[in-house]
Length: 279
Length: 315
Image 1 (cartoon, chains in turn brown, cyan):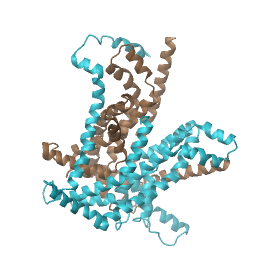
Image 2 (cartoon, chains in turn cyan, orange; image 1 turned 90 degrees about the horizontal axis):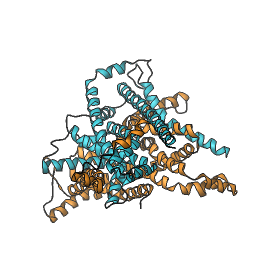
Image 3 (tube, rainbow over the protein chains, first blue to last red; image 1 turned 30 degrees about the vertical axis):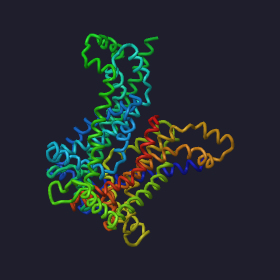
Image 4 (cartoon, one colour; image 1 turned 30 degrees about the horizontal axis):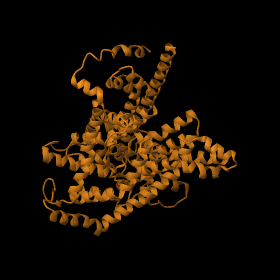
């Protein structure tokens, strides 16, 4: 027994070191004053300063943020409806196809998704004249499509872990389905919607392949810019940019996680208080 | 508290508004609305594109915008099919691309499983708060940029990268090892970036596992390793399948990792497809490559969908 826990402990340590050490080393070198990325030349933050003066980087970052906010918002709305459908509407005609279309985008290789969406946009444009050209709009549509599947899965697992007794009770007491949806179901899944939005946001911010297919000339997203630079090798300013992005995301995820954890606790207390006052 | 109390009052005068739309909504209409909107979206933006790809895979490459002509009769379609899919069968670039991708994805999946299973098991067996922290540590890389995490390895694996420098300094090697632009680097990249996808479904499966079964086996005198192989492992097969498919399928079509870390002489199929599309602008052949890739992946995708549907409790 003891031997196995030593084994598990060492695998866990190795696994987490494997996941985190590369990122930490990259962050460390972003404070290197030497232009040679592998030779330590002393501590410096000059690359961060250079980064903020680089208009190309700033423009690409702003474009990526805009696409990410819009696509995450729509993906959350569509994904929430899809998750509700899968968790609460039971069997209906075409359910197998629907659940297939929700789980397939999770594993579909990006090159296939990207190519097929590009060809859809080109075909639609020649058939009905929309969308005119390709650029931020088509990238946004593509991102909505693949990230709504992730949101749907999050919402669905949240809903299946809650029993629907409260919803049924409200219906029995004469509430309309939409009222139940608005007053009971939505508050239950609100934390899942927030994590869904955040996930869709980061997926969009991170996507390179699908954006490269569905983008037009002139609108370079941040991953596309990073990729074109990275292909030429490691540079200290990319290290600095990467460090900034990783830090912002990590802090964001931890804060969001903490807030949701607290809200959850608060709701549990409210529910208990409500039950206690009814007795 | 006050919220809970005030709710019933706000929802009472429903009967007052009895528009036809309202009545439609309250009967079954709301279900149609909730299901219909995402359904329609996925039909247009997810399913329809696959039909378009299949049509364009039997179209003719032309120097025009867009660079293809859709066949107008059966004979043309057959001729185009023979040309486009002929490349894939006869040109070694394509079929070695597929074989390479499947080999690399399969081996990486095995390594992910070998590393991910004990990690998931260890997390599932640890207590309350430790478990939450470990789980957060698994999920966190999932949120940080995939591209940047691959980029981090370029600095590590290069000839004058961190790993070589450390090994040289320690005197383990006396000249740098070639690690960048090799299949080895691609394996590292895939295992590194897909490991969380393996751990999470395995963890979800192992965490739900009924510990009374393993306890019963132990009480009846089964050794720990025997208990693991006879009880725990068979019960975790759904998690193994889900995790493996989550790694294998996207890894087969991977583009970024082989381009940044791999060798140029034996590209994976994702790179072949992308180059066909962007460098050669031959959209019909790119579509044919995508169609064949999809056919190769159809069985694993079905397995994954089946597992997902089972996890939902339907079918």
